[in-house]
Picture (cartoon, rainbow, N blue to C red):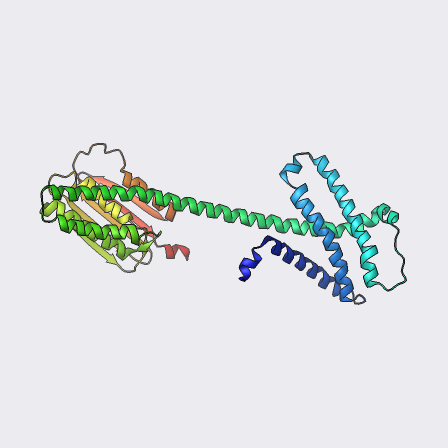
Length: 356
């Protein structure tokens, strides 16, 4: 059986805690008292810890619960004193009538039950501290353990929430891209263009990547650029010679980037640039990748007047949301419009550089 799985069992963890508690007390006292044998010190600690553990569980799982504390502090104080007294008395009874006969040589005297119950000084200042010590250490260990579990739970929920949001945002982007591409192929098929089969082949390669090869938070930058090349070839079938696309790539290091982000920016340039420019649309795509960052820039010509120009495209809104989830503040996405040119510049700080 795997040790990690074994120690995840709640009962096992509690047994290990109390075993360590007894061992620590036993070895600590054994080093101080030369006239006591190891077994004698051990059984005394075992007895004290037994009642201390009972007190610890009563305090941690009953007295200090929200449900009990709602009854008022007076009720808590009285209950604590009664439980403290009873456990101290039981611990002394056990010590006198069970432990001492095991470790002491007869004859020896034993306190009568009435004396045990009425000797409050011995109960509260001799037997009580060992019970309180065990209860306090156990409660502190439980508190930090619960705090750690709650923190891990929040981190897990946060990660699951982020993953769910990323999947939702990508599900919004992918159908958007697919819809536009199918429209392109449909236009070719209506005209009985011989380029239809080539377009379907390119779409097949793109869908293979989108559906099966980018289901992670980050992918190699070369894979994204190959996807963009396929997409550009597909769009060229639609626009013929009137479309000019210039791609300049300078990759000094194979950085990891979020999947489909670059494609969305390029697609946005085709949709709102080439798609709305009835003249000779032009698109410039520039990629720079080094050890510090990855910079991706898309510039496209566009019509002088664009309807609903003040509204940000759905694609850019979703890209910003994805990047915020993955990078926090370690990215920059800027748009700029100058006369008949529209540009988008994305800068991603290298994830490995950030971790250092």
